[in-house]
Structures are given as C-alpha cells and as structure tokens.
Length: 236
Image (cartoon, rainbow, N blue to C red; front, side, top):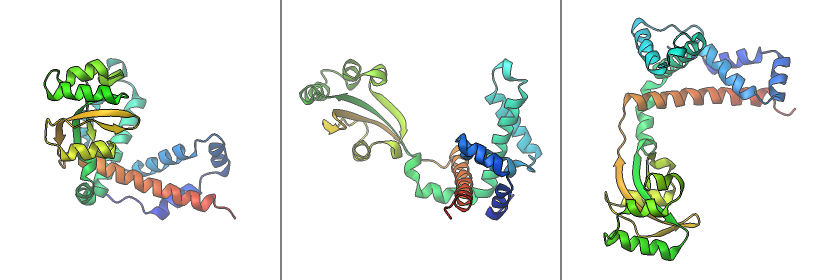
C-alpha cells in the first residue's frame, strides 16, 4: 500500500472550514486536530487482511486485560486505528527501516550502570576508596548516599538509550570495561562515580522495525502539517 502523496493531503486540509481552523487556533488545538485528521484519512479505506486481523485480535487481548474494558467499543476502535497505522507504516517504510537503523544504532543501544552522586568532593573521594578497597560495595554506598529513586534502586540506572545519556557519562561507559568503576568526576553541580554494568547491543528486531517505520510515518505527517501551515498562515 502506498500512502497518498503530499498534495492530496494538502488539498484535504485546505477544504477544512475556516471557522473550524480559527476556533482550533484560538483554543490551541490545531496541531493535535490536524495530526488526528491526517491519520484518519490514511486509515480511512484501509482494511486488514485475514492474517492481520488475527494478529490484531491477539494484540487486543494483550492491551485489554481489564474485564471492564472488554466491551468498550471506543477503546477497541482507538486500538484498531493505532494497529492500522502501524501496519501502514511498515508497508510503506520497511524497505528503508534497516538503513536508518544502521545509521542510528546509538538510539537502540542501551546501557545499565550504577551511579553514586554527591555535592561533596571530599565525601565522594572517600566513598570511591571504600568501593575500590572493597570495604563497601558500590550498591551499599549508593543506597546510603544517593537521594530519591537512585537511593531506592541502590544506584542502578537503566536500561537507558545511550543517545539519551549525558555525553560525559556516555563517554565513560563506552570506554570502560564491564564492571569497571570510574574515578570521581564532576557533572552538573555534583560529583559522580559510575560502574558499568552492561551495554545491550542493538538488534534489528520486529519491535525496532515497527518503531522506525512509525517514526517515519509521523515525520511524513509532520512535514505535511508544516507545509500546510506555511501556506495557510504565511504573512502576506
């Protein structure tokens, strides 16, 4: 299946009543409405194949586990629309998904590490020596000195995408060996020690493929909306 070209969507958008556009603008709902509007057009005449329908029923059984929602037709319709968009995205973008995966492997590479942080340089040095001398484990040190969730988790962080990690921490993790504890370093008003637990290398799974295809579809929709707004709301 091929999605309609950009001009088709622009024509559909231009046919929307002016009073509706004005109302949505005033209520700051225009972008959200137009996103949904285009997605509705994309799935409007799309029908699932027999196998796709069977897969959707499995998907539905996973998503709707609460007995109270099993007869919720609005929820089922919403999930059906999401499922159709996923299938359409795969059918239109799967050929370039792997190429993009290769170019953006960092997004799909995940790290697990343990972090100890404190504002006191002298204390963090003392804690570092406790760890490397094996007087206390890094997990005990993290639990006794971190705050919030990092205290509750004994300093454990992740899995988190390397792309979303601060560049300084990412650099240390990439260069370190597994289980290696870093020397104290200063970052964002705090002193840190980190231990590299594991790097999860990227794999081109079905989930990753679907994720890339959906991102491509959403980017396509965003490009249409940007062009529509530049034509419709440009200063004369």
